[in-house]
Amino acid sequence: MTAETIIIGGQTVKKKLIIALVGGFLFLGALLGTFGLTGMAAAIPLVGGFTVSFDEMTGTGFKLYGSLADSAMTQNNPVAVNEIDSATIKNLKISKPIPFLGINAVITAEKPVTITGLQQKATLVTGDATFNELTMAEKYVGDRDLSDPKILAGAAAEHFTQTANTITIKKGVLETVYLFQKTVSLNGMKVSFEKQ
Picture 1 (tube, rainbow, N blue to C red):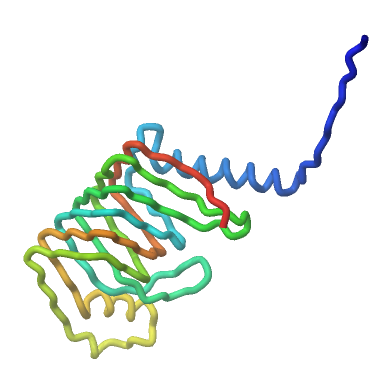
Picture 2 (picture 1 turned 90 degrees about the horizontal axis):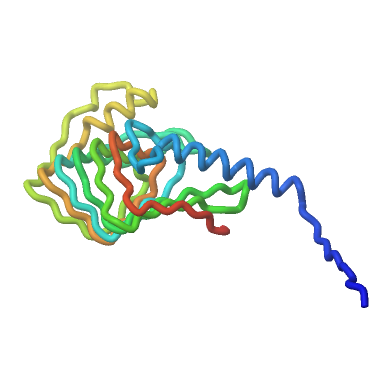
């Protein structure tokens, strides 16, 4: 009796495979360049539409003010700029849609994340917030030419400010167009891709 070899073949759409591989390697290269092999990032901004969610964030040195920021599709979006000197975040999840590949790139951290020099430009912020020593202030900006977007952004930043010694946000979700951390430690980091 002789053995018969049967080869069952399939088709690979080379264009989609190459796009997926190149996109994946570019994202992984950017991610490793950002966070390094130790899970530590230093002074790296991430620009684009991101969704940041977490169970709880505690921070010190909080400041909030208005501004304008560009997204991938539109310019001069009104945003709330959040600056925090240092923060600890539990169950962090950052997702970034990549529409031309039909996927979301997702970064999660199983252990608490520590961040210094955090700055976010958010178009939406939701959650349960608690502040310690909260101060709100306004400044007159009506004497400026607000038709120029650069002047308008600066006036928006000065017009209204909110500061607090400490902040705690539970069940937080932020839609951001800009995310910057001076340093970040992502212990238990996981990178995955989800279909949209």
